[in-house]
Image (cartoon, rainbow, N blue to C red; front, side, top):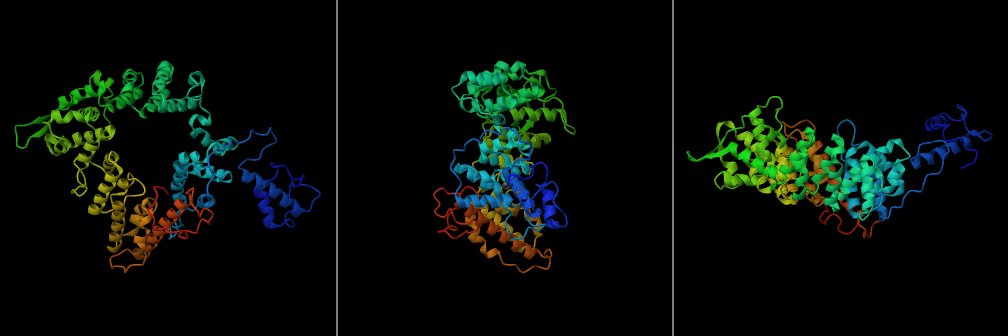
Length: 563
């Protein structure tokens, strides 16, 4: 760049663009270097501004040079994967305008999967991609964890120079600060006692993973002097790796002066079936629920609490119900939810979970009781009770009596292993179609297991053949693009033709369905290509990003977990 170029804070990019469009004869450049032809001076200024824009640094007055960016020891991306990342970051369209997406893949929706796969391989982000990567994470909070993990230490270094990217510092553990080595006990204690709040939270999380006893010791030492909102966040860190060793500390927290802290401590203790709080809740809950054997068959009878005494409140029972809820049913639900599920077989005649759920409940208490068991199964991550409460996916209401909503079913499914979860949702779709399956699909592992993928595609095909209104399935179709196994692309070839439209079909529905299936197939092939490009030993790493299907058997291999 010429030595007489204008200062960076005197000419804006908009000024330069306007002058270039109008021509230097019609609009002589303002505040540019004197003594040079106007077109040359304009190009010099534009070159300088371009370098500053690419550097991701806002123009400012001269100051001390910053320290060098830290090294990133991770291996670089393969060339094809780096090109793919550039294409993904450059796509800001989010699909076609006017509500119709066309047949082209939505690249920004594939970026989260690409980042997850790149992080799984342990690659470092290309330095030139960091500004665009930070911009993408700034606009989408759901991208931030994966984007910042991939961007690495250089992104945190860069974020210190641009206020638009300060979110990266706030999102990073400890604000991006380095934590003491595991063996540096003096440094650990000094940081805990003197560090900023974000640094202390990060330290507690790190210690929780490797030396939980030290984490509890530090927390107990300063607990009385911590602010209530800080105590709540510190207590929340105990969710990771919760064990019986945490019980004494949590029992003390039940007497905290903050109601939110007490409630969180009680919730954590109730997730430990062997805790003293769980035992106290079991006594209270079983006093309210019993088996009446006088009839045939026997039924469950419920006598809800008549008061919420101080002991119940100390153990986390909220005394005041929300609007529209009765006090007694509100208290009963909290007691049953916090009681260990292992309590009920002995209390209800030695029956297992399925038999208990199948029993009738007298006086209209069934919904309240089963809903509380649902919450208990979710909190205790009990697969046996979750399975019993879900029931058969082909049941008339597609679930057990406790699964009162799709959201509740989705939570219960999360307690099952991925294969069983996918099988249950596939059975639900086969019986009930896709209209209510969106939330359930969201808890299934990606890529979807083969039975689930086939069930989704078959249901979409049935909806198309029935002349259903196509736009009502756009959400499921979008999920399929991101979650269907890329190996399914070949099976979808027969769905690309425009079908004969029924007389009662929505106008233009056939064209929409063909377009949507074409986009689905194209996206699956693109995901397969993305996975191949990220392989460290990929012999085709230098192929251009769009050359899908040029390597051996690319479309015939099983899909990888991501993208």
